[in-house]
Image (cartoon, rainbow over all chains, first blue to last red; front, side, top):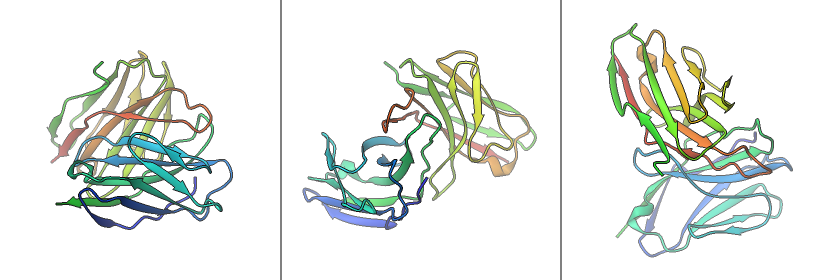
Length: 111
Length: 115
């Protein structure tokens, strides 16, 4: 699976949009981009995933560049409860494929 | 539904002792996983199972054994604990991945300290 690069930390003011970047320049055609987050010391929580089209759900939006070498997770109106470590993961299709977690981006949402 | 539960939540062992961590899920998921997370690190896959009676090695399997005798349970065993196994252990489960979809549901974790 392709490796990902994320900034180690970011800050965001409450109520503002949080834009978390991820670089995956070696991604191949059958690999999906996944985002998970881990709040404090809890188990990770799935947020969203996509292949090449932009995706949106009740939690966030995922914007993938046309060449698929990078993506951005957008939390439209960040709250204090969104403070967490956010993991960008690239995973290929297939039942044997697994998630490989990096060190993620620590997002701090402040008043 | 309880989702994914882990037992125990905390444990302290002495070097050389053995123990078993229990993971249970009530979502009828085929796949189950065991991860470990060391301070400041991401999660690393230890072992996983694609169905009852089957197990497979992940990224860091040495020093651990697993069993999946029932679909809803996945056990992680440490036969002879070492200080290097001090970590937080997370269990997860998912349906069989289809296409690109593989949402894993995680338990609350077990904090293990080996002295």
